[in-house]
Length: 575
Ligand SMILES: Cc1ncc(C[n+]2csc(CCOP(=O)(O)OP(=O)(O)O)c2C)c(N)n1
Image (cartoon, rainbow, N blue to C red; front, side):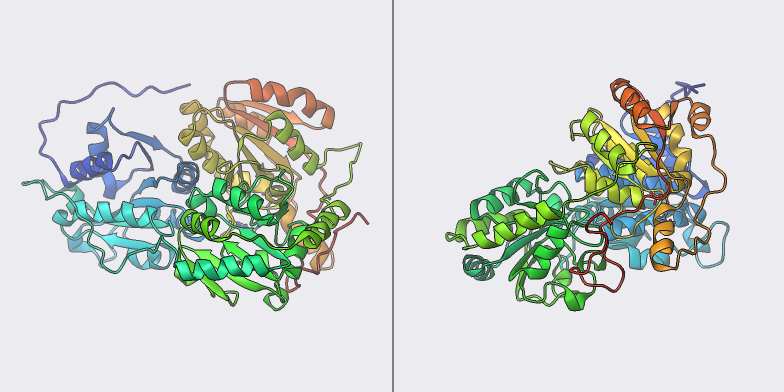
């Protein structure tokens, strides 16, 4: 049953409040959608949202965590800040995982939390939590509004900080007496006053020259492309640059799609479950050019063995990233697009690297990604390939965290940027499905597929309500192996096969569950069934949940075990 809101708009004679001012400021910032959940401390804001109906859309999620992951999906697709509202105390603390996730993956968010009235802050008032202390380490910046006159400036600064430099989450905590307070005069328009915040976007020409020289002298160059390429909208420049000088490209997990997977220069993803060619390229390289990646440990493996012979160049808009994990010879603080354009202008000579390219081609040919086909069951890797085929590789794919995430990364073959939405840094189960909601809202014309694990989906599945309510045609593919698959894999390989608490002894009937939320549900148990149903599901103009039963024992290979170097992959070939 769909519940229609009553169109009983009031012509309010109530005085304008701090909350009304807030909504006006959001509209001025071009915000079209609010992802949120109400409660006592934000009631004045929700009253203002009610009065502003028709000018700004609010989507009522069923859990604050759902709302913030949706905002992350929206931000990943649009590049614009996702805007979240939650109440004080438990509403705010339910956002903590999403805020941390956005911080780790550099996603722009502006988050509004309600706070108890100024006079009772610090008294353990009802639903009080010290949100400023809790979120200081997980936000790019946070504010607590102490004076309504500051609100216009704070909102302006928050959007600016969230979306410039290295993007990230910014939180604004608003005490209830401020949002409920009557506005006797309209505060002055906000102006940004941030003398200490001046992100460097243009590269130093001398450093660019150094890198250009290093490229022309290199015999074994390799580019590592991270999500900084997405933030700089620099995929076209990256492709042009790599092609011009025949530079092979490895992408990070979050950088998938920044360089087309089918380009002959693409080595695929590097890191723990990356390709052999990508990892050996980084291991053997004499010049590693990192553009917008943060050298996280899942990518580098044991740092002692990471690119031991390479001169390292690192282009990043965040100076704090450079030299943080890997000693860097050529540091370049810059926006990725600006740096690539400058490099293009300055690099006249290409490296003599034919031998290197041949070696890498051999690695690609000899050690491709592999899996065994089992005629009696459905391989999860095959399932991903089938989704790729039916969507022509053009869908927006969101995932949870676990084996299915790695198979999606390995087998969806991303050709274009802004099609891949995953939780890379924090590795948050429960991310994929609500992120798909935000991605679909951001891009109504796109095919959006949420590829989720049977465990992770159960962490945020309550948002099934939203896809029905908002009529979002998200396709949910549950890669159902009856287990916490990735945990099981590690227990099998690294903990003597002691399968401790990683098998899901009972499962809901996912099809009935979908139906309970008014959407179509299908159970798929064989390849044949999938082949017949998949085109139908993707042709259907509405949400569908597919519970796909895959082989439980299947493992993600190849793999770098914890503590090992990138050249020590296991499972590179079928055993
Ligand atoms: C919130 C959260 N809790 C725990 C983990 C640890 N963890 C990583 S993968 C995984 C198993 C995921 O199982 P499932 O969602 O079924 O996906 P699969 O690995 O089977 O594809 C777990 C428990 C996590 N990443 N996030």
